[in-house]
Image 1 (tube, rainbow, N blue to C red):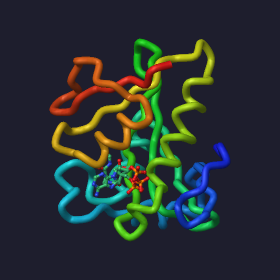
Image 2: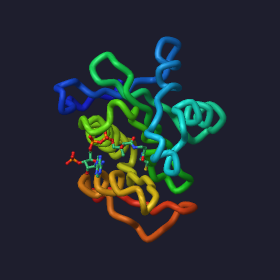
Image 3: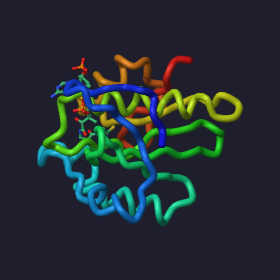
Length: 156
Ligand SMILES: CC(C)(COP(=O)(O)OP(=O)(O)OC[C@H]1O[C@@H](n2cnc3c(N)ncnc32)[C@H](O)[C@@H]1OP(=O)(O)O)[C@@H](O)C(=O)NCCC(=O)NCCS
């Protein structure tokens, strides 16, 4: 479990836990709003399959107290940079501070790995809520693109 003692706006403690025999169904069912599907997968299930099929990505379940409310994954690029991806908070749980707490939990954990790697993520330029969230947490565009997404790196 990755726990940085962050609470959401309802006072629930946000933690990141491995996907396991008990929680995988709930993680698979995590879904964005319909209008967000142009930015992210339609279900957490897509990210779980990606993690299973790839050597790069590692899925985590986002918990608010003991409830699964989202999915996030992390991975290591060839250049050693550590990435956050697959950030998806269930539509019914958005706007409660879970997304912010998730990044505030995962980013420092990644930055503390061996060699203190840079922490990066990418987002579609039209994804205003994601851009606002990441910018407020110190992620700045590097100028690089990953397909049609802006790559951003967190200032150390
Ligand atoms: C982006 C996302 C992860 C944010 O998660 P969340 O739990 O709703 O966000 P929070 O409640 O923690 O809000 C964090 C910040 O996001 C931004 N934000 C959230 N909802 C917003 C909205 N509707 N409009 C504008 N900004 C918004 C704000 O900057 C907010 O800052 P605040 O804490 O000062 O209010 C969530 O909306 C989501 O899952 N969206 C669909 C998938 C997606 O786009 N993932 C990102 C891919 S890069």
